Image (cartoon, rainbow, N blue to C red; front, side, top):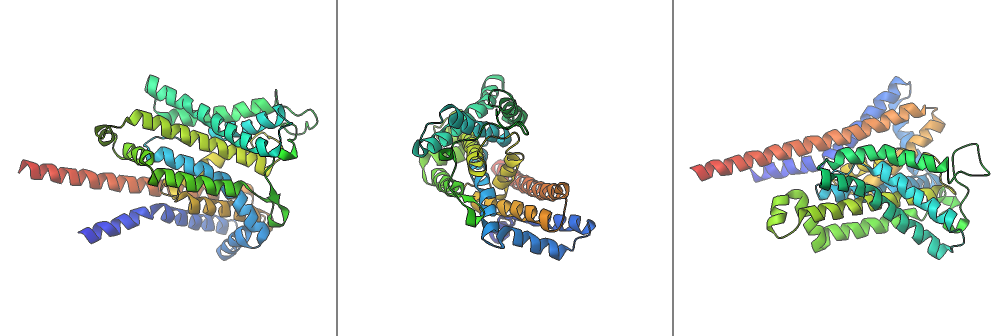
Length: 361
């Protein structure tokens, strides 16, 4: 019986990976309908992600914000919090870059970049605290509020780049004036303009992984997510742990937005991080809602994006079809995760029922 359970646990643990594979196979089917050989699809996908130094740099640049936001999302889920407002938090975090760079243009690099990262973290925390407030004061589920805040965050940034922060020199597209070079992350053109955001992301993964698995605070957060009653019995306050996890999650998603802005551009543009938040959600699920598992998941999605962008140029595949493929992969991962949760919940209910029956006997 133990062997069967261990095999089942292994299969359930791999369900996000299986979902990703199913999504990629669905993508191969879509491009077949478009008239592209599936073998060509896979070859071009790998070549576009890892074919040369430029491709690898593109993969790492795509992965950097996903790793940071994915780690934050994983922390919220571990605490039993339903934060799906990554998109809005990411956009407001990106706004922090414009606030620092445009309002304090004389700051040197050694102060400017850390200030942007810190303020983007704070902006993300402030934005997610709206959902925390409604959950604690009004009893509204944070899932609903964070979902609605996604649109508010994007529209707020759009209003800023079309209003107070609108560029006076570039009127062809809604954006701010360019930032000083001291506010931009260092990049390497020979590596596809790979920037130092990937190193920041690796530090975030290491710190959050250590925090969640090697510290008492991390243990308390995980316990609160698994069983609020058990956490309360142990002398912890599940509500405070929920607030802490949500604030850290929102802060890291905001920081991801700051990294995306100063790593990929020299200004804040309208729609700069479109769909990044939802991809970060998929990254967290694919990583098993574990900050350490987010690392391979984020690199996978970074490679996927780079490969698809390359296919759009080499095979002439329209962007709409590429979005459809990416959506199929994300849906497959979410469905796989939902099946895993359903099976495990049923298993726990059966185990509890058997214990109760034995007690009655």
